[in-house]
Image 1 (cartoon, rainbow, N blue to C red):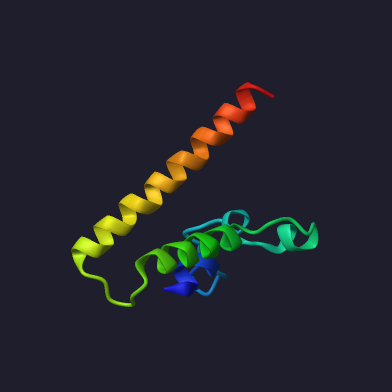
Image 2 (image 1 turned 90 degrees about the vertical axis):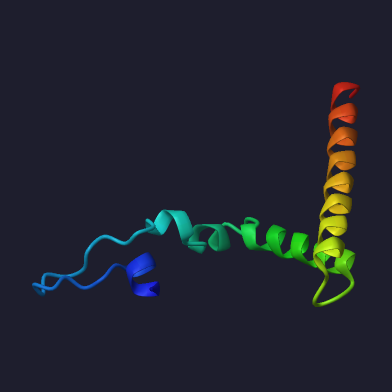
Length: 90
């Protein structure tokens, strides 16, 4: 799976590799690391950490999951509204 998705499968005729499913520019973090830019993973990991803290359990019920998703979305909506409001009056 990794080879076909990111590297490309070997051609059956021995002439190198077929193009990968995802282009290197799409998934490679090399340029971001060299330029000391933020990586998407940092934001995703922070969101997962906040969500996990909201759940407060490893195996939530569907009801607890739903409640937690609503709380996280509500918090995000409030933050977004504050950003929009502050931007309009700056």
